[in-house]
Image 1 (cartoon, rainbow, N blue to C red):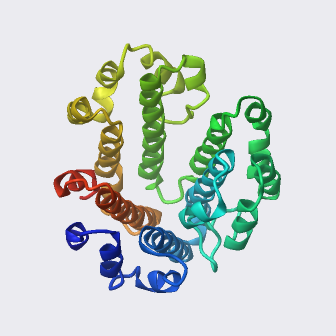
Image 2: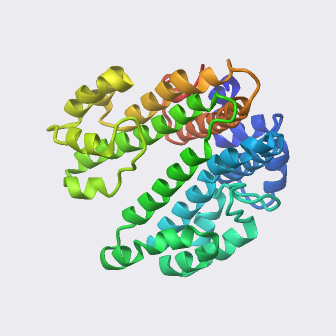
Length: 330
C-alpha cells in the first residue's frame, strides 16, 4: 500500500500490482483495457475469484449465509446497469465496473448471474428491458414492484431501495445461530444498514428533500429504526443531525472535517472506520468458524476499496496525507 501511495499515477499503480496476487487478472485484461479501466477490471475479477475460494472453504451449514452476503455484488451490478440505462450510457463505459468474471458467477449468489448473462442484460436498450431480463433471477420480480413509479417519475430510488431491503432481509435471515458466533456478524450487518441510512439522511438534508422522499430510501433492520431515523431528520441541518447520532457512531471528528471540506465523504470514511473497529477486526479473534470466513472476505473487500481510493486520489491530484486519511487500516 505504501508503494502504491508513492506511485505517480494509475499506470504506475498497475505496474506495482502486477507483482501481487492481482497480477494474473491484470495480465488477462491488459489486451482490452488500459490504466484506470484495467485497474478496475483486475480488482473486480480478482474479488470474484477470492469470493469463490471463500465460498468453497465454507462448511456446509454456513454456505447459505456466505452466499447471501456475496449476493451484494449481483445487486451492485444490477444497480450499475440500471443507472447506466437511465442515463443512456454506452456499454463500453459500464462493463469495466461490473464485479464479474468470465469463469465465475458475478456474485456467487443464489441468483448465479454469469458474466455472459451480465453482458446480455447490459445490452438491453432500456431500464424496462433490464428488469424483464432479470425476472428469471428473482431480482426482476422485486424491481417490477416499483417499475411503474420509475416510468412515471424517472426516479430509480424506490427500485434500488427495494433491492437493498431484500438483500439485508435475506442476509439477516441467513445468519442463523449455528455455532454461536454469528451474533457479531449480525451486528456488523445491522451497522452497515445504519451506515446506509445515515448517509441517505445526510444526502437528503443537503438536498433539502422532504421526509416522504427520504422514507422511500431507508432500509429497516439497523440498530436505529427507520422511524427513529425519520425523527432525527427533523434536525435543521447536517451538524445537528450528527449531534443527534454522535453517541452511537462517533462522528465528531468527521464533522470538523466536513465543516472545512463540505464533502459527505468524510462521514462515509468515518462510518467505515467505526464499523471496521467495532465489528470487522473483532472477527479475527474468535475461534475458527464462519466468522473467520467473513473476516477474510471483508478484508479483501477493504483492500480493494483502499486501492480504489488511492487511484481516485492520484486521478484528482489529492495529497498523500488526505489519501491516507481515507484508507481503512487496523
